[in-house]
Image (cartoon, rainbow, N blue to C red; front, side):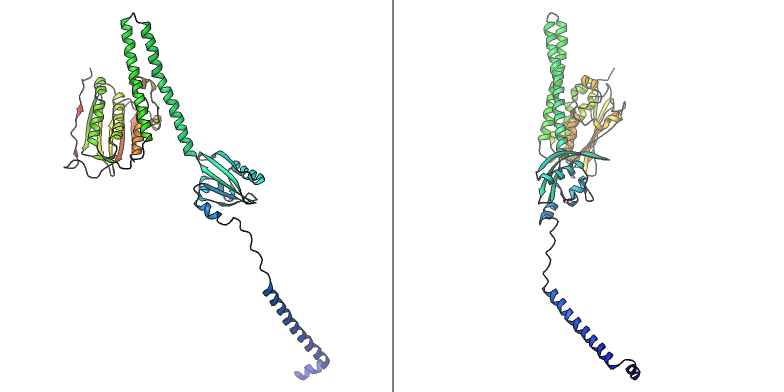
Length: 402
C-alpha cells in the first residue's frame, strides 16, 4: 500500500501537507493559550441590582399591616400574607383600582399619600381600610394597608347607642312634662289630678328603669375581662332573681317556679350573673299572660351550666329572633310601652354571657312562648357536699286568675 501511495503522491506534495498540518497544530495551541489567558484575566461582571433593598423582605414578613411593594411597571414584587388574605393582591396585580391609582400618583411625584378606602368583594362583607403609600427608593412604591373595619363598626354602634338613648330619654321626660302641665290645668278637678299623677308616676318609673339599665350596660362594657372569676352559687342567683320580680309577678298573677339540678356553681361575677338572670326572669314575667307559669331551671352540661327561663307568653316571630339582642330593639313597641320595657335587658344578658366566656340562646314560637338559655362555665366540684341533686320545685304563689 505504501508503494502505491508513493506512486500517486509525489514527495513535494507530501512535504506541503506535512507542513500544513504542523501549522494548524501550532496555531491551535497558540489560540488555546490566548483563550486561557483571556479567561484568567477577565474582569467579573457586576451583580444585578436586587429587586428589593436589603432587609425589606424581612421587615414586611413581620408586619401586622398588609404590605405591598410595587415595581416600576405596576407589578407586585412582594406582598405580605395579610395582603393576600385581605384581597389586596391577586397574582402580581393590585386588585383595588383606588389603591393602584395611589401607587401611580406616588411614583409620579414622590409624595406620601394616605386615604380611607371601603373595599367590596362579591360574596364578602365590605371592609374599611386605611392605605398609606410611600416611595421606596427610586423605582419602588410601598403600600401599607390597615384594616379598620372593627373600629368603624364599634364607632357606628356607639353613635347608634347615643342616638337611641337620647330618643328613649325624650319620651318619658316629655310625657312627664305634659302630665305636669295637665295637673296644673286640672287643679280644680281632684279626680283628674289623681289620674294624671298616677300616669306621671308610671312614666317616672319607666324613666328610672331606663336610666338604671343604661348605667348597668355602660358599666358592664367598661369592665375589664374577668381575670379572677369567683365561684357563684347558681341556686342563690336564681332565688334572688325570682325575688326581684316577685311583686310584678304577683300583680300580673304569674306563677314563677324552679326545677332542675341544685348545688351547681359557675365561675364569674355574682353581681353580673344576677343582673343577667334577673333580666330574663323579668322579661318572662312582663310578657306572660295572667294565670300562666314561668319556669326557671338549671342543669349541668359538659363544660358549662345552663340556666333556662321558659314562659308561656307572646313569643317572638321567626324573622325577629336574630335581632332581639340588639340594643333598644323591640319586637312589639306597643307592648313595650304597656310593660315599661326599655329594649336593653337582653343586650345586658348577651354582654354578661360574652364577658364570662358563655353564650345565650333562644327558642321561641309566636303565640306559644319562649325559652332563653344562659350558659356559663361550670365548676366541676358542686357546692353541695352530697353532690348534684334534684332541686325541689318551689313556686311564687299568686292569686288564681279569675
